[in-house]
Structure formats: structure tokens, C-alpha cells
Image 1: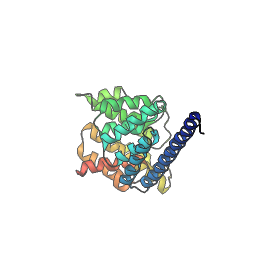
Image 2: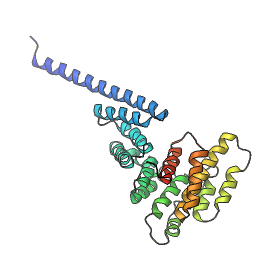
Image 3: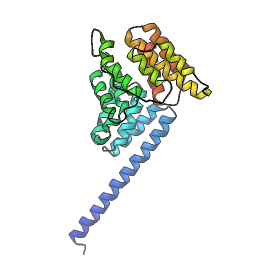
Image 4: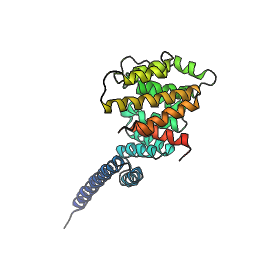
Length: 251
């Protein structure tokens, strides 16, 4: 005769096994979604990650990767919801979420974006991009004399070694011109790949700079150059692509 305690024990083992299988299945879906995103099939990645979150609603990484793919699809509110869920499940990683800050910017959540970039500074305090994106968020909140007010609040950066990021920082501070940033990007003897990467970041941030100071024509010129002429294998290229699509009036 099987005793009740043995039945309970068997049920417990079965439950643990099912949970482990579900977690493993969710992880397999996440890996497949990452592969789809690498192939620039973000719609498929989202489908796979939808399944992963149904199987394991507490899979933080599924929300993180879905947040990235949702952004790349231009679904900013959905992206932000996913990043928020990720941070809720992994609060110890909240300071690292620069992608969430960029999503906040494009979702029009400028105050929240500024807070996210301020928090990121506690994780990495020599990233010009972080300071610039906080500047961009802050400038959207300042009203009259927005650029001057945002400059006064710029996060301090001393040694971003990527060329031409310190020149980009100086431009946003009002100490260098866009032409000087471009000259710094071309300086030395960079390889073709290095030059392409340098020019991407120079054009993107020059374009964003022109946009914030109110020169729509030059903003469009440089952001489209970043997206169309200097493609790089990085999430930031998708930022440039999405911004370019908005300027062109496409979804």
C-alpha cells in the first residue's frame, strides 16, 4: 500500500521536475530569440519571447531581450514595459539599463530617461553617451534656454577613450564645433572599419546636437548619414535607424 507521504513526495518531485523543464524550455526560446534578433528578425524574436514569458513569467532575461527587440521594432511603450519588468525582477541591475533610458527618450518619458541616465552614471562614470543622452532628456524638460540649462547639469566625463567621444562631449558643452568633431574622427590613420565606427558616432551625435539646438536641416543630414552611410553592428545603429525613420516620416 502506498502511504500518503509517498504520494506527496512523488508529487513534489514531479512539480520540481516540471518547473525545471519549464525554465529550460524558456531558456531555449530565449536563445532562439537572440539568434532571430541577430538575423534582424525582431518580430520573430518577440514571438519567441512571448512564449518564453508564458512558460516562465519570472524570466528576467526574456523581458530584457524582448525590450530590445520591441525598441528595434519602434514599439517604445512595449519596450519600456519590458525593461521595467526586467528591473523589477533584477533590481540589482537597474543602474546598468542604458537601453531603458534611450527607450524612455523615444517614448517621450524625458524625466524618467534623465533619471535612468543619472543612475547609470553610478555604474559607469566615463561614458560620454550617457552624459549626452541625459543632456538630451533634460533639454526636453527645460523650456526657454533649454540648451544652456542642460549644459549646466551635464554629467561629468573625464576619460572616454573612444574617438571622437571626448570631442562630442566638448561640443555639447559648447566648447567645440561639429566640424572639429568630424576632424577628430578622421584624425590619425584609422582602418576603414575604425573610421566607419568613428564617423557613425560623430554623425549621430552631431545630428542629435543640431536637433536640440533647433537646426532641423542639419539634424536630418547627419542622422541620415549615420544610419545610411555608417552602419555598425551595434544597438546604437538601430537608434540611428529609428531616428532616421522618424525624420523620414516612416513607421
